[in-house]
Image 1 (cartoon, rainbow over the protein chains, first blue to last red):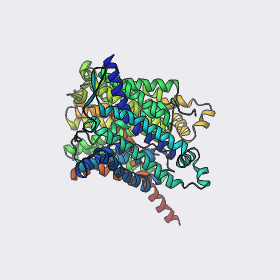
Image 2: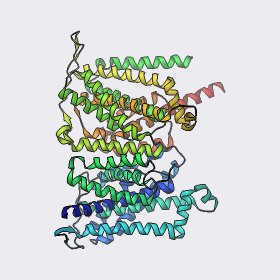
Image 3: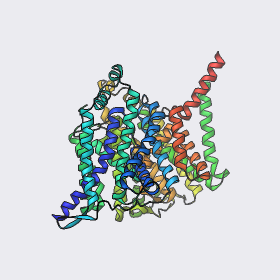
Length: 288
Length: 322
């Protein structure tokens, strides 16, 4: 029982990072219609920029988490404004490969700037040591992560459903041309949504680095796959689906790692295949 | 008519150059030529799916790996015969493609790309984790090239690179020829129809999903052949063959050369291998430069190399007539 609770908790905190990446990915796909391979790279850049801020500007974790993702937003702005914008009208392979080109470029740039080896982010002590849960220690930071995920979800929901910005975003994602005809400046909106999605991914990276305890130039390549799987299971373009999908994937892979280490990823894929057979459009996807 | 015979002459010259290569150049060039031909087999088969049918797969590395590991397991446990080993690799890749394709061809476009990507990574993680069977991150090592025997009727040694080269060349020519036959067959025309308008093709009475699955398995078999040949060339099979960054290679190559012809992926493969060699000679940052080249192609030269050449020829001709 004790170990099952702990495996669940570990799974939930891992799921929250996937959610932070998948939420940005889903938002960008929903509005821009582009599947962003480079989203994992923004997650990686978030981790590295936070690390650099912590090392060179301020040792305060919160300042790092505030400033680091802003740099990533600037990178995202350049990617959307000068490159992605030119391929919206092109066929799918070109869009995907454009973002893939950025995966190559960012992975390599990180190697050049920060070195090809792995880095260890500074130890975090603001959350104290660990909390006893059912007689076993659990890091307080991980509990904080588990709380952040739903907060982001609620924030996103409030923004999309309750604000003027959210209305415009929903309008542009359901009918781009009509929104444009009604006076929405779609290109600016696209840039804003892309940058916001990058910010979400970067926050995920910044939070993940102390949790994982190690940063490598390829760290984005794994989480992007998990985020894709989450998007498939939850329904592409559905934030609700992405949240639920991330939780399921997180917990399932934690159980897999604990009980069947050889087949930990395999469980996830079996789940994915099952969802596809049962609901091809994903749990919350609209039937096409 | 004149152009057609010119094209045929070019093919003959190219073939003659490939046949004569081991006698004229050093070992390293021969090795690079083999890399080019193996990538060419991979890309030509892959382009049946992307260029012909309009399906973007990001998981063909899995079939490449299936070919390599199928070949490796066959060599380790059953028989050292190279041709049988290659056959086992191709069969393993085709079966895996059938299994994965069954789930993937229910979707198109982005969903298809993501599904193939996810299933490809499943294969990667299986190979990576099942250490006792696959050797984990070390891969399968020590695959040797025994002579090709014809059941007592004689044998051909392929141990040296210059000898193995001709086996690769044989499969390369065979693959390109088969791909060409598929492209111009009624089956290939239906595939083009599916690319142009899947719904209409369906209304014409074609079981579109079955056709998609068939071409998926075919392209998977090509990938398996390429993988088996590489396993023998490098004498190992590595898990990263199944990784999604390797699955991107045939996509890049097709785009580099041009999607809508058979020569496109071939030209792309040649360019890819040459570029990688040249860039790696000057800098370690091969990925960075390749990413930049990719950006330039997507933003500026979407027809690929073949498209650029075609445009030049067309313009020249227009000027000549005008």
